[in-house]
Image 1 (tube, rainbow, N blue to C red):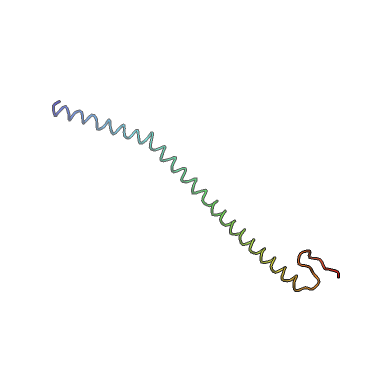
Image 2 (cartoon, rainbow, N blue to C red):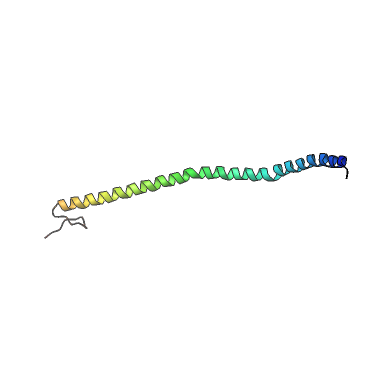
Length: 94
């Protein structure tokens, strides 16, 4: 092969390779990237659900603490009032 034949071969191959590369990007990589971005969007939409779940857990913890505090207060009140039992809540007759 002479140098002008190599130059012609390169001149023909560069546009052909560019076309193949462009089609590969368009037909293979673009749908893959779009799928990844859709998954990312769905994941971001799911994140507020996780935040809401954490908030509900915190509320449950607060309510549990409040109930325990109320139980302790009721038990203390029962001990202050004579004639009531600690478990039954009714009065005892001697």
